[in-house]
Length: 113
Image (cartoon, helix red, strand yellow):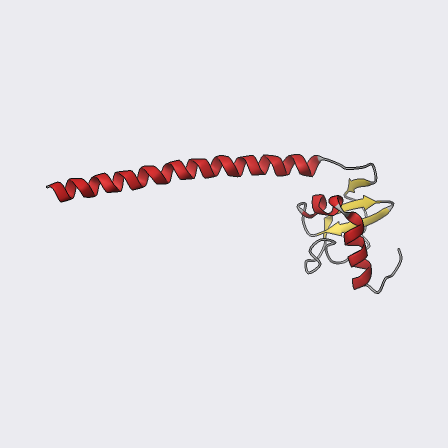
């Protein structure tokens, strides 16, 4: 009888610990998502504008160069329209646009726009 009681108690304790961790993990995920949303909506300068009805100069994403551009996900930076594979890439590009433009030019033979 005692081994059965000990086993039941052990199962109860393990399941209770797992639930606390899952709840904590979910709260942490929510916090990270909220922070990412805030960062994505911040616009560092007036040089960039998100647009939807323009043809980008690039065929592959400015951030993840192996992915093709989604024509609906574009951004105007200093009068040039750049395309991205997804919305998540736009905030990364906005943090250091010249870095990504320089890499784009190197991949494409330093062509000017």
